[in-house]
Amino acid sequence: MAAESTLLISELFYSIQGESTLAGAPCAFIRLAGCNLRCSYCDARYTYEEPGQSRTLAELTAFVAAYPAALIEITGGEPLLQDNIYPLMAALVTAGRTVLLETNGSLPLDRVAAGVMKIMDIKCPDSTMQDAMRWENLASLTSHDNLKFVISSRNDFSWATRQLRARLPGLGQDDNLPVVLFSPVLGKLAPALLADWILAEQLPVRLQLQLHKLLWPGSERGV
Ligand code: SF4
Picture 1 (cartoon, protein in one colour):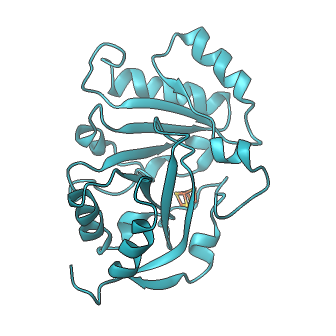
Picture 2 (cartoon, helix red, strand yellow; picture 1 turned 90 degrees about the horizontal axis):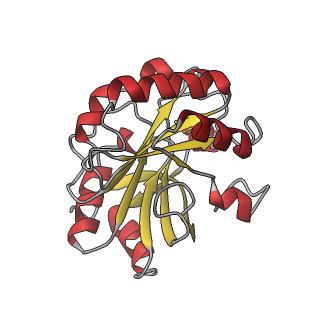
Picture 3 (cartoon, helix red, strand yellow; picture 1 turned 90 degrees about the vertical axis):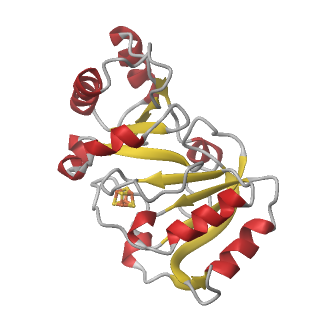
């Protein structure tokens, strides 16, 4: 890893992992600046409306080294837009760290180092970004990974259910498939309503609440 290699960073922080099957665990977050999507409900606009700060890979490695027992999450914005993220993820996995990648579902996953846990979003129609989804990525996801549908409405739920039944028909029976999360957009869809719909359809998915937003309501950054 070249010492002068850099990444454009929106923020670095230590918090509780809130949006995956590892939710609840302490986690060092590296949030990269920049995003290629413009979701209607985006709660991280600062990642693309502000320029971000250049940090060397050595600085980022030193940041996560301060939290040796924590998970490491690479997020954004969209982290895969910056080439230097690939060697950083590979180096962290090689160092024995548990690395999570949160990605928006629009970019290829084939350069992501083996061993990185991928949390891939699927943006539903209310986001206005559903046509940007790269469905070929489903072939790269394993039982180690999460596929997260971000749901704002009944229309989104019906769309997500149709996509699941068409694209992952073995879900619930095939142990090699990713864990599927249905996550309600805070302020748009009541979690209890989404829970009722999941139960009524008998879907083999997990309801995922954004734990950090329940713990620290109103905090927009650093959680
Ligand atoms: S992918 Fe994430 S950061 Fe980008 S616009 Fe959508 S919600 Fe915002």
